[in-house]
Amino acid sequence: MLSILGTLFIGLIAGFIARAIKPGDDKMGWIMTALLGVAGSFLASYGGALLGLYKQGAAAGFIGSVIGAVILLFIYSLVMKKSGSE
Image (cartoon, rainbow, N blue to C red; front, side, top):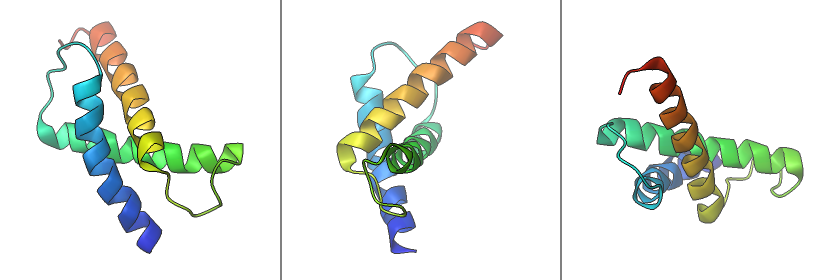
């Protein structure tokens, strides 16, 4: 339970930092940025566990969460450009 809360908290912060790192103008609000950050944190946690970087159930580190969030921001921007929503 505590690792999930830690992942959520780190993900919120990681989303905003990933948004500052990633170049380009993403037209999304702070809620969507936070959600993508949390999803990136979970991606880093579970992906890192699959690769053997983290123990099963352990929260990803801050840098891993930011990298996961940046990856999801790039995927999000690609999907939005293809769908013509921007």
